Image 1 (cartoon, rainbow, N blue to C red):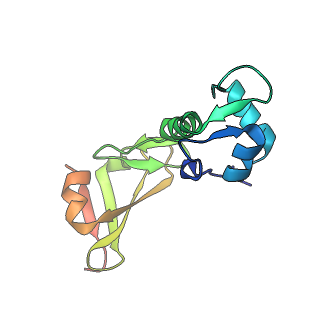
Image 2 (cartoon, helix red, strand yellow; image 1 turned 90 degrees about the horizontal axis):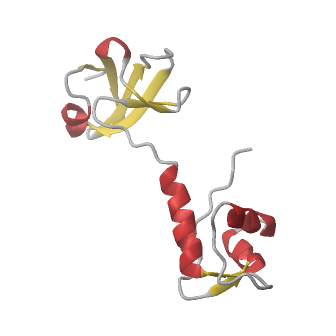
Amino acid sequence: MPAKRVNPCRIKLHHNYTAGEAAARLGVHKNTVLHWQDAGLKPIDGQRPLLFQGRTIRAFLEQRRAKGKRPCPPGTLYCLKCRTPRPPALGMVDYRPFNSASGNLSALCAACGTVMHRRIGKAQIANKMPGFTVQIAGG
């Protein structure tokens, strides 16, 4: 089962939380919050009970979320097998429209051969895939 995504906005900025209170607000176990302390979440002081500022918790969670992002630069699609943005193999990309304004790009990964997909607006194809042959299926 994949890890649960916590919503940092459930933490109020101007409140102080114990590990149990923060865990209850975020829907995780109390030990998860204590593990976050080992990963860099700073308590107000070292005394018991450990108290965390709301703004500190939210900044920590947003920083962890931002660290996991891998935006795709122009000319690439995200390969789930390689876990990184990769260019399409042989410069060939297919576009399958869902409606008149948007659709799905698909191509093979140049490194591993896995099929990659990217949701995109039809008007953005030239900007996101410069220099590639994009075949539009169905119209």
